[in-house]
Image 1 (cartoon, helix red, strand yellow):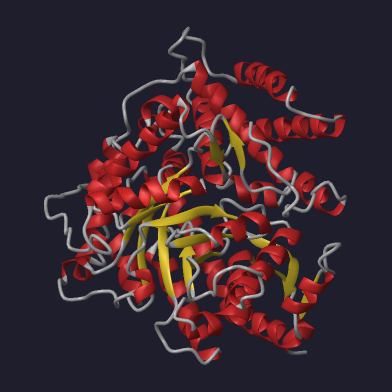
Image 2 (cartoon, one colour):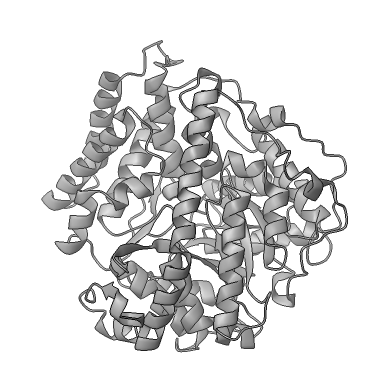
Length: 552
């Protein structure tokens, strides 16, 4: 057997038969088979290396540091990443968490004045079979100009395609008897159907790479890019990728990650919540790494996060690479004359100005109404397309700076907030949605990750509440989850919705009470029987133009 004969594919989700036929042609299945079988062993090796590194840290009690074996790369002042094409020179404002299965929002994003769109199959997307097929097909429609009254792909905001991270698998495709790695399924289909057209229109193919933890993972992505370009007859170096530094271990290898991808780099990106959650993931059982209440004590001005952002900007600019910041999750209230509108805009402006002053070349917003105010902020405080000239020679970052936990405790408000976000995220996934709105901002897998991580860690260390010295225990978290459920249940419009919310709460309690910390909430859910059966039993509705998400 060769080609598509060695690929097993689930039948199409109901209502997506035409999209399925368009994506899974004989030639695209041959390409996917070749791509996945070529790199499948490498993917396993990367995941095994993650486990062995974690085991070494746990057994030795060591802390990460800058690698001795790659000192020569860091000390060599001569190397640079290849310059990015003109469409990536100005990256001021991208739209974040843009799950392309949401056709209506995707079209609004294409019509917006943003510089780019983070076309998201990862944090802001729920990877149901329906959503992956619908989302990838919508990208193809955008690239091939099949949406009416939408700018030509060469004029629309640039598409920054974000495939799933290495921890995710695609249950609906088996290649040579194994489930396909999620990122290769996404990347392969996007490149096969869109790569050439994007290149011909000088608008790609450009990617965001999530949750990269090491130099080895960057090297693998580079090998995949080289192979794919050769296979599709594209010039070497035409693929460009921004790596999201979302893991504390990767923060010690930023220069090496750029070096491995130097022919394909569109720079590095720093965010707050996945990165903060990675401290619990890697060191959460150590008392010295107890992370205080994020709602009160964790922000980009704290030493460990400020040092990470400064080092990222310095590393990128020294090597001619762009450095971008995280996503503003706040939503602007609709009435522009209201106090709440002014307050939210002032908050976003203050936080984003910190990033601009640190030297970032761009960042993301979720709310399309924030695009123009943030573009004006760049215009006001910077000159030219980017800040590559800001070399940040004033910055010296030591391992201690990156590993210093902020002072602070745990509040009752913060504990309840984390419980609510964790439960609502799982509830969203059971509904086929990758993000939701709560208390005036968007929440996605990154905020769910930090929320459930903190609850797990506070239980593990029997932390006391600042408010009344109660210990964070299983009983307290169970009682508070019941309280939160009472508040959230009032927003449910049917018995079925209430049942789903209760299922989500049960699953949340499972995750935060595990003896061993589940590495990613998305992996945990993606392997969970309740989530998988919710797709086949029709609980997951199509997230599409006619399905607005309620704002909680």
